[in-house]
Image 1 (cartoon, rainbow, N blue to C red):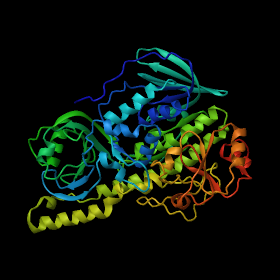
Image 2: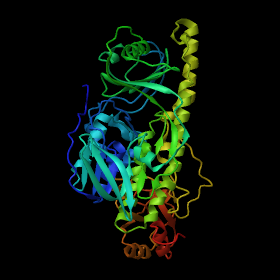
Image 3: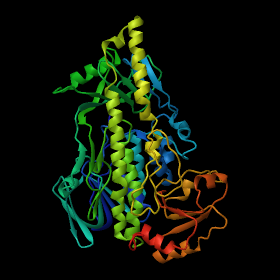
Image 4: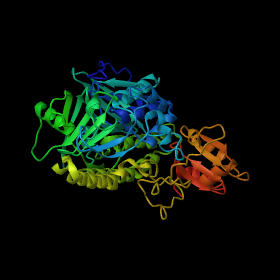
Length: 549
């Protein structure tokens, strides 16, 4: 396998008008189309590239992203991907791949992924390389009757006129198409031409190091390694290098830092990879190679009028921890229900302002976490004594093991990062209180209070309370004496959908302590309380249909 996903033919864009135009058909762009398309919105997705995947990235799918995939009945597709379901997702730190293992962080296979966070979620993290992850998203997006996906088209201009935004789309043959939409969502990557044309600045720290990334075929790698199989090998010698498995066999992505002014051609790439493996003649076939620089930066705003930013167009971070694409999927989860309700007139357009207010702090938090992971990684020892035999070598490796366990475990113990973020400063969350909410990146503490993700509770049928969320607001009634009539009336007047769910049991009352809990379509709690006589005003506030409380 050299190119796992071939390019798509350039096809015409038939319609002139859409509800939403999405620029960029990476995972975040395709997920935006899926989320909106399943709600019935007319969506056009365009991408300047041809859709081929020659350099796969972003294999680590976290628990929160898997919950979004579960909502769209896509999480099970990982079991049908080409990555072996039983291959463990261990992380192994080694001196060189054929030499000494220093430390290992065990993680379950995809087949056993539900053990990742059994009390916190009905889902678990997965290893899902881009060959199959992007293909699953693309297949679902293209299956939706209101979604159109087109490759080979770039957006050269956007312009607002009244309650519409016009997008000028062009293809390489010189043909152009002018389409109109209510909104544009820019998912066009870290260099985002749309963000640049809008004049939105990136705030934070630019790339301060250059890394070489290589997509390679190494047929004998697993046979020559001295360690058991792992989904990633972190080599400490002769420089930091990360070997990430792409198919559980011969395909790998290798990344390593370049020294100042250093540039690697094909020969240097192969020599460096062999040196990190510890074999001077192992066969290494380079499929694709490129350099990249990590950043710690977040857009100064996620919204300019009718254009919204998502994914790498809105935030860039070091890949350490695998938070980049997953943060973008969180953007989708937050944005799309709001767009849908605004498009339908069920919510005021100011609801979209809450997208920036809620998601930018999460991106700032996650970029800082990724940078901390990166700095801890490059600080690990790489000295020649790690290769020594005897007592001195053993002592050097023991010191390295201590450093790895002490500083690197947090990268893969990140459930707090994945599930624990809160929308405490949101204008459409009523009654949030951050005063006693420590932000622990490793530990997730469920809290059934406003601004938090609704906790997972197993229902009598074996499902999760999270399965009730997604298409509408949900009012959870956990007390027999609580009256939901005022809420039903208030939402009926607004036109926004509301499902009322009566829950009972000790697990429910522990997780949702208030008699009434209003949960948004993205699964975050908008309000919780005892009485519903203020339901009209509260409904107006969370939907931005009148002045907030």
